[in-house]
Amino acid sequence: MKQMDRRLFLKEAGAAVLGAGAAARAAGAVEKRPPNVVLFLIDDMGWRDVGCYGSRFYETPNIDRLAAQGMRFTQAYAACPVCSPTRAAVLTGKYPARLHLTDWIPGHKHPYAKLLPPAFNQELPHEAVTLAEALKPAGYATASVGKWHLGGPDFGPEAQGFDVNAGGTHQGQPPSYFSPYGIPALKDGPEGEYLTDRLTDEAVAFIESNRERPFFLYFPHYAVHTPIQAKKDVQARYAGRVRDGDPQNNPGYAAMVEAVDQSVGRVMDALDRLGLAEDTVVIFTSDNGGLGRVTSNAPLREGKGTLYEGGVREPLIVRWPGRIAAGSLCGTPVCSVDFFPTIMEIATGPGPGPLTDGESLVPLLTGTGDIAARDLYWHYPHYHPLGATPGGIVRRGNHKLIEYYEDNRLELYDLAADPAETKNLAGEMSEKAEELRRALHGWLLDVDAQMPTSNPDHDPVRAAQSK
Ligand SMILES: [Ca+2]
View (cartoon, helix red, strand yellow):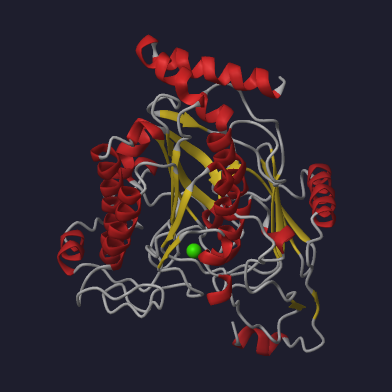
């Protein structure tokens, strides 16, 4: 379909959904301002950390309501099993491997490991085009509220197109969730003020002051990353509800999840109060899997800092009233790199934007089509204390191949039959494994991925001690 035809098609499809009364409004949408976009990026929230994703311990009525009003993705992925690279992918639409930003900043040191990880970018390069910069020509006001973790003062949100930066620094976690926070980019509040609430105040203030123009609110909460610091009364309530046999049983973490849920509720309320809900796309997702020692991603295997599904599978909910069918589900695998082209299409219509590694999800969201079959890739040439050794992943259809670079060993899983990755099929399906290995190697060359090298100081005993 040609671009203009497609634009008309989408407009008519939208009008059909909205009905006759709203059709006139949709027809006038070309002159109207483009939709606002609110992107919640929760830190370290696992795939099952939300009620509507199956948690029986955490209570998330507002996030569940967002899902009931929008679309919930069951196979959404973070581009990396740790923080900074996924953030870079969300903001640029490019794979971390292509950006040469493949580990959390600054990264771990493993001086005696078998491989030497490559030196990777310690900030998002200025020349990277972020969503904030790309939305500027369309008249968007832009804010980053919360954790940045993509470089220090000269590489902060203000250097990447954001008009407002509330709380974004080089820091990967807050020194304290209670004021005084110790976050240079956030003025302390009254003693004891809670960070998740305060950031929500900042977000709502930004929405209020930009109600007359299109806005992009990038809302990367510091929560639910460690330190586990919660409001004592909420934590006490969850302490009384821990059930035998439920691997999700940390009351402090539960209270932190609840604070995030209330943040989502307060933003939804503000959009309603200001009459903006119909004109605002709300996206809710996370940057990597849940941290194994404070939550559980079961039935998925492992968690943050590993190459298994628990490390990269994320909640993803998108609400767009009148365009996304309420309560819809989508099982298509999607990735952090897709947000950039999706948000650009929402803001400026279909058409060639900056080149990305992602696909616009608008056809999936609006039910007007599918996206082309494609592989998804990951490249993590690093060691992580939570389990990962240098490796790469390709997902093609329901098959997922992991190659570990230390010894080139392969693991192949059929995620449809075995979502918990219990049965390695690399031996019995060796042709499939080789096909996917070739695809992974081709992609690594294509994106000019930085590879680890052999370590002349490798010492297995000392490597094991320094884990
Ligand atoms: Ca994270």
